[in-house]
Image (cartoon, rainbow, N blue to C red; front, side, top):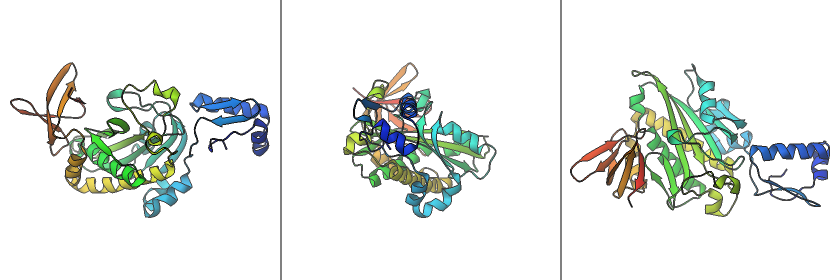
Length: 317
C-alpha cells in the first residue's frame, strides 16, 4: 500500500488492513528495521522515501512467457533471506535435476560480493537473484561461466532499456565507469564431475541514502540512470530468460560462443591496467581472455594470464 510513494494515514491503513493504528505503527517500525526508509509526518501519515515495485511470482511467470515452463516449479520468491546463493544451495543439494532453479528475494541480510565482500542492497529496491545449474563435467570445465553470464546480463539490461553498459573483468557491469551490477559464482564438484553451479546476480535498482555510505567504490543505480522507479518484475524476468539461454549454450559449448561479444563489451580491452594480486601489483595492457576466461595482460617483455579468483583489476593511473 505504501509502494506508490504517496502519503497514507495510519487510520486509512488500519481500516484497509483491519488492524488498529497501534498495529500499523508496529508494522511500520518492522519495515524500517528491514531497511526501508519510511517517513512519518503528523497530519499526513506515512510514505516511502521512493516508490517501489514489489516482486510478484505470478507476474514474473507471465513475463517469462514460454520460458515459464522451464522454471515454474523451481522459482522461489522470498521476502527475506540471508543469501539467495546459500538458500538455493540448500534447496538443490543432492538433487540431480536442478537446472534453472531460481531464488529471488526482497531483502538479503548477508549477501556477498566477490572476494568475500559484503553486497550492499537496499531492501525492496534492488534485484538479488540466484540460479542453479548442474554440469556433467568437472569444475575446471566451467571456468569462464561468469564471463558468459556477464554477456547475458548486458543483453538483459539493454532489452530493459539501459544503454551505455559495459563489462569489467571478471564479473562487474559498469555504467559510465560506475558499478551497476555484479556476478558471483559458487562452484561445487569433484574433478571428474559432475559440477553444481550457483550463479548470483545483484543489480542496483535504487540505493537509499542510508546505504550510500556503506559502498566503497563508484556506483550507480537504475533509478539514477533512467529517472524512474525500475519495474523489478520485468527486469528479473529478462535476466532469467537470458541466463537460461546462456546456461543451455554454455552447457554444450562453453565460453567460446560468448568470447567475441565479451571482448567487445570489455571496457578495459586494449587499455593499460593494474592487476592486484595480494600485495603485488602488475601493470600492463589488457589484451583479451583465453579459452577459460583468464585475463591476458601484456607486460614489457611477456604476456601473463590471470584468473578471477586470484586478482582484482583496476584502470591504470
